[in-house]
Image (cartoon, rainbow, N blue to C red):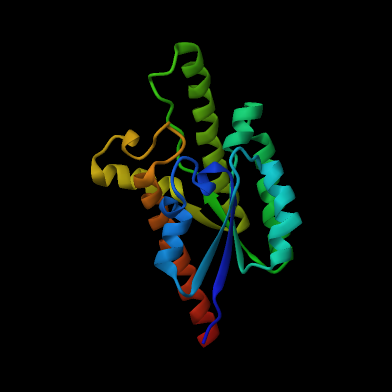
Length: 209
């Protein structure tokens, strides 16, 4: 019998599940769907940057010897610094550290940020610029993973496809344009489940061979 696959989900409030109950978060929902063979550990921290994630990766997550680590962050780097530059340095650094420990790195492509038109114009203009930086960062992440051979969990693509299928406006899934409500977390959970199942089948095939 194959052992359980333990995946550490390292991130910020999008992983923690800011604004929803624990049992409504995508990490909880995905684990329930993947049980008993896959265990997901929620290491999301509200307000964390990729610099903080890097510190936590080495301080506690890698020493716990997970089978894989999902890395998803960058929103707070943009919020605090106005730039994704720190994330573009820290995500590759974390991915290399994960590989060096013989652990599988998974890179989360974050969902889009959609500023609310109800914001005051001055704030809205700043938020629109942040959203554009976030979009460019997501594109960079995809290119980086493609060139480096890292597996992605493309939450952005899953979300955009779901919006098209439902013919819904994005605010059905958010409560503030960045953080997802319970419905949005369900979409993210489906994306995680689909990706992990592909990895699980690949690992089984490797063992059989």
